[in-house]
Length: 238
Image (cartoon, rainbow, N blue to C red):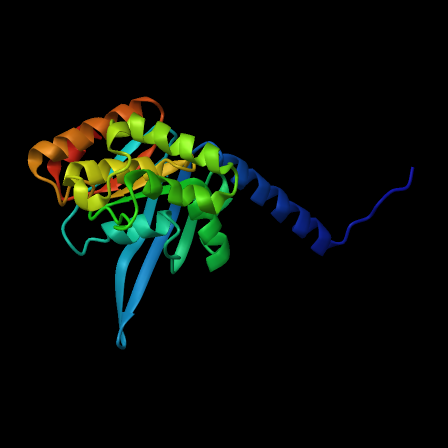
């Protein structure tokens, strides 16, 4: 058997690779790992730190609510975890994959395949019905036939109690109904995590509680949520 002599540089490289593999394996223990996250914006010539050294872990099935005053970096953190922006420094692992420094195309794929979004103002397409709005993410995945997409969208609308409103456009739906359509759409591609940006911010308190009950029920079924909100009721449900 031949013996193999490695140079000092080769040994160092192997040790580094083993260390990196160990770190990735550790991060697979959590759905999301945020390490020493920093985000700085330039306003003219002034550097403004939105985040400084944030550490966070999120496990599958968690419902995490992030609260804080305006300007505290809540939305910045949400955008970074959701792949809508990249950090100045630090790492974000999603299911063991470091998404911190991915290019725009790779981040778009991460968002499409792994992350659902629910926004304060619903962001539904006004000319489309509830059913068609839920089907939009399915068109980009290319995984289902037209009939399969329609069935899945109807199943999701049934899940949020809107199967009888599937052919109504957003203007024909109440605020609470529109938010339920947005939640159904967020689940279209079976995301690893659903991000909620002020999910009750544009709703009256009664409708807001109804939406939070729906989110909690979905969370009990295994869905993972991370939310930012000014609404103390969201924290009580998380």
